[in-house]
Image 1 (cartoon, one colour):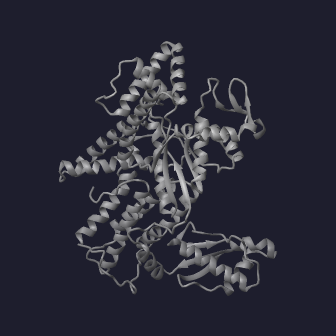
Image 2 (spheres, helix red, strand yellow):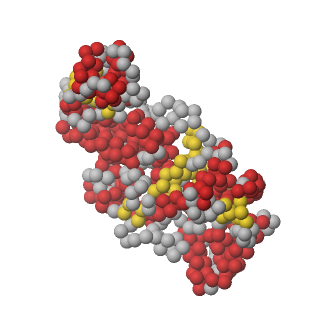
Image 3 (cartoon, helix red, strand yellow):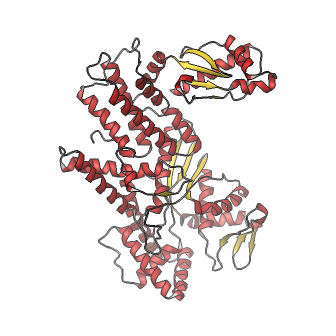
Length: 562
């Protein structure tokens, strides 16, 4: 709804400029002023016009103000120096905002564009660990934002079932003592075996030849027993990974197996199409020097097997054919690989992916490695978060039973992880700090607490949001009411901007601003028992909806009780 202030101010400026016979700038600049005393929208259009008119911005502003018509949504327009300032009529504006906040508030008009967004895609050689979690949370949150912005989004997990890591695990099953039906969580058990195999190969590097032979046999595709074993390993690991993702509120619409691009002939077809660009010695590769990339792109190994990059190329061609936009969420260590991939994609006439690169997340204790068996799994991270949240809730709510406290602890603990990661732009490195993540004053819990406060207040007042209410003649006057309404009105604009940027940290910041504005209102403005009780309860309810929907965009639950 805040967009209406921007739209109406631009429209009035365009009409005034046209009335004066001047050329309308292609993009009239309007923004929210840093100080409410300077209005709700400010424009620097006079600076844009100054060069063409060869007049001072101050003179242009005076002439524009002499002819401009104030739209109904504003009470006045004036100037501060050469800037033109628009002041909202908070009677009309507030009514328009509150009327627009339905249960699905934040859901924008359909765009009729298909996006395939790939995220997580961790190798199925062990459990998800803290190094993967940023990929999952950025990808899942962005998918939610894009869907809310009106796009048709399909989220995909690209399953690396042909990688050397899987061949190592299969080798371990053949050569080491391993129970294929373990008692523990399957992805963790496979991770343990992967670690053991790495130890064996480190002690005896000659065994790598045996692993390579297994991979070659698998890719050849005529060994049914081996193929079933590879598939069984991957499926079992994915089952464990999916359980982790579900608890983290991360969803995937499709799991795309890498091997299908060998089996359906896609890789062979692409290699044939690129044949004139390929060079051969011991390996088949593309020389990318003429494209400004010094490192060549190897597509076929010396033993005749394809590489991850070869199958990834086929996968990206498929995504390109099935969507309008392709988005990849990848660690910053993949930048070279994506630059390499974009060259053959362009030669093949396929869409190049929009890529979100993120820096890594660590604990203060240091970095992790699945290969070395040194990592904190996402399962362990979630357990720790829920345990810590439980301790806080026990201290605060002795009136709740264990079941209720555990439910809230789960919501708060998982929410803390997701919010802590979503709140920073992907370009920034994160060191995960528990005290910050689980803060009831500054972290996600403070936002969830605002929602619970709103629910409690509405319940206490026995508020019924289905009751029709005539608010035509009611006016919001308290500055905290106006501030809250203004922030609520910006929700759709924040979603639009987040979708445009392919970023989610501004959603996280908005949620904190919204919760802070609601808390100020809650603490300072009497609701129940006031002359404007019905109107103020309506504002509380609209705040509740907006906070809930904002948290939902980040995959975070909004507790009714805390």
